[in-house]
Length: 157
Image 1 (cartoon, rainbow, N blue to C red):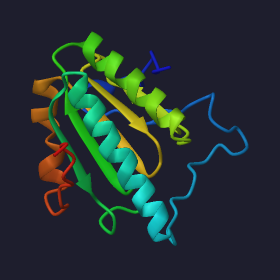
Image 2: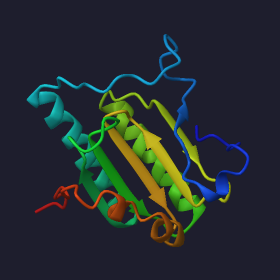
Image 3: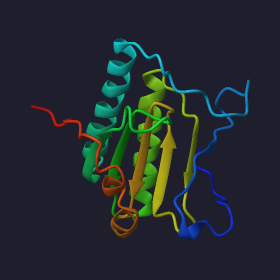
């Protein structure tokens, strides 16, 4: 479930993923990304990112994009971005994404949202998903932040 009590003063900064209590409790630190990932692991991560992007589009999210940040970030491999028109739409899309990831054997490491519920982040370690309302997405402009990252084609042919 998405955390309901963000840190004080977090309205001016992006939400940080928090540990999901349903995730493995064997360690309290972030799982290490697979730095020596095989091609099949990269393909599996990429396939999840593409499925998430398609699911978001099916859920009527707008401006869906996948950024391939392998080699640019030590934290994750793919970032999926989507824009929703309301907090209800964003929450529903987040739940659908979490369900899809579970079905594909990707554990959710954590999730968070900002105070105003205009941004939700889901952390699947190798794939991060950011769902925004339009003004929040424009304000943080993650596409500009990761401007060097190639975009992944995800639309069905």
